[in-house]
Image (cartoon, rainbow, N blue to C red; front, side):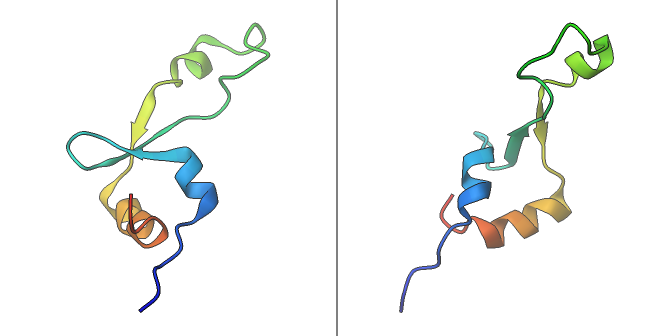
Length: 64
């Protein structure tokens, strides 16, 4: 039986945490930071994906 392909866009953006959850970095943190307000800049922290989104990501990333 052939292997399932991982979604190439998702595997560049999503990683597994030590506890097995999915985590990703938020957007808008690369450049033009002087114009952005403090709230936007604080949202740079990693986001742990919710359980409903995690089931969708398991289908996209079967080997991650």
